[in-house]
Length: 239
Image 1: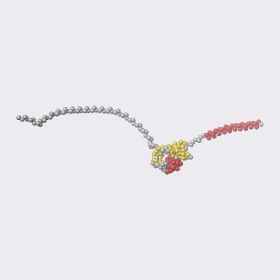
Image 2: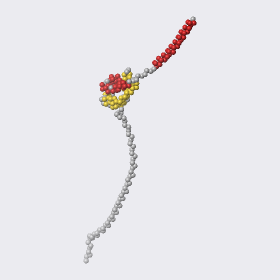
Image 3: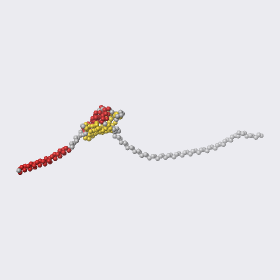
Image 4: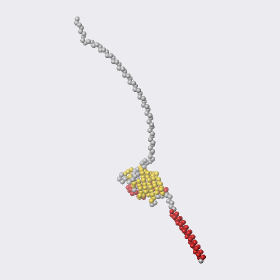
């Protein structure tokens, strides 16, 4: 009986020990799992060279798009919700862009991009800045009138990667008023020379004394007229 009781007590002790071990182990495993789940997966490093190459290709392809009236290229590149600000300050839409390109409402002898710079924000966002020089550019408005759009412009294009493709989501373009060179600062006005003190007016020469008028010569005394001979003959006394 005592032997049986000892076996029972030993079995209970083993069970309690095992339970305590599993009880300690389970929270530890649970914490480990929780910690692993909370660890943030590092963002993949964006391939900046590949992003830059693709966005510059899109920017430089616009001259071909104009020439070939490739409206479908606009449909692929521009986002449906694109925000566009054009040089006159108004806005336009993707559908209007496609219609204008297909109709040839925008044309140019040459359309070149200069100083394009791609700034990569992350793997799915970037923007491009640069200048566009348009020669022989024409744009037909809704009223049918054609405007000359030749000149130099500065642009800012914002792109986002959506469903694996880069989309133009916002763009703004502004005409440069003085292209080609920074405005020359105005030269400081040359200080005016202090006026030289006025020369003392030359002393007026004392007017030459008017010559004293020659004294009028006393008129010569009139010569007494010669005594006229008596016209009446003196009567001689008759003897």
